[in-house]
Amino acid sequence: MSIDQKKIQEILKGSMVAMVTPMLPNGDIDYPNLADMIDWQIEQGSHCIVAAGTTGESATLSIQEHSELIRFFVAQVAGRVPLIAGTGANNTKEAIQLTQHAKDAGADFVLLVAPYYNKPPQEGLYQHYRLIASSIDIPQILYNVPGRTAVDIDQETVERLANIENIVAIKDATGSIERGKKLIELVGDRLVVLSGDDATALTLTQYGCRGNISVTANIAPKAMSLAFAAALEQDMETARKYHEVVAPLHQDLFIETSPIPVKYALHKMGRIKKGIRLPLVWLDQKYNQKLDEALTKSGLV
Image (spheres, rainbow, N blue to C red):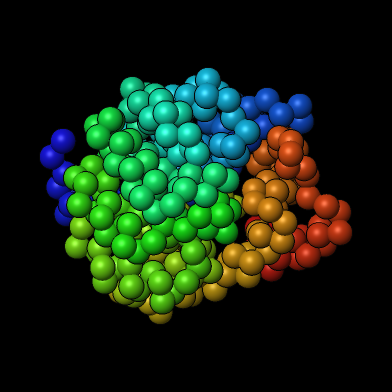
C-alpha cells in the first residue's frame, strides 16, 4: 500500500478516546448503550475513536466477540471520525486473524499492543510486527505499554519497525516525557507519535506528539478534545485552561486497574450500566468517595 505520511499526520491527531465496552450486569456487551456512547463521543468532539483496546476489555473478549464488536463500531461511527481497532495479541497468528477481521470490517487503522505475558526478546517483537504488517494491508499502530505487558519495545526496535511502510504510528504509554521526546526525535519523520498517558500527553504535544489515546476522554470528551485541539495549534494557554479542569482525573481513574474506575465514573454519570467482566470486578467501595469527589470537582456529576 502507498502511505502518505502527511495525510496520516492530519488524520491521527487530537483527543482519541480509548472507549470502554459497555456491558450488562451479566457481562454481555450492551450494544444499544454502546451506540449511544459512540454518538455522544462524536458529538462532544473526540477526534478519533479506539475500539476494543485495553480500556475496552479486549483481553476478555472471544475472537468472535472481538470481531463483532469492531464491525459494530465501524457501522455506528459510519466514517464520521477515524476508527482505530485494537487487534493486538500475544499470539501472532491470532493478531493476524483479528487484524484481517478489522480490515474486512472497514476499520481505518489497527492498534497492536506488544505481546503480553510471554515476554518476547526484541527480535521476537520485531518479527511479530513485521509479519502482521506484511500479512495485512492496513495502516498499523504500535502500542507500547510495559506496565501492563511486562515487555518494553526498545527505541532501536521501533526505529527498525518505522521502516515498514504500513506501520504508521506508535502509541507510547510509558508515561515518560523524556522517552517520548526521544522517540519523536528518532522516528517522528516516519511515524506519528501518540501518547497513551493522559497525565503527560499535553506536555508531549509541545515536542511534536500528535495526539493522546485517552482514558479520561471517556468521561470528559469535550474538555479533552478542546485541550488537544488547542495544543496542536500551539495555543498552550487555552489547552491548559481546558486540561486543568479534568487533570486530577488522570490519576484518579487509575486508583484501581483500568477500566474499573472509568466504568464506575460512567455509571455514576448515568451513561452505562454496572457491568464488567471477570477477572475484573466493580470498584471497591473504599474508593467511591475519592472518585465521587473528583467527578464533582470536574463538574461531571
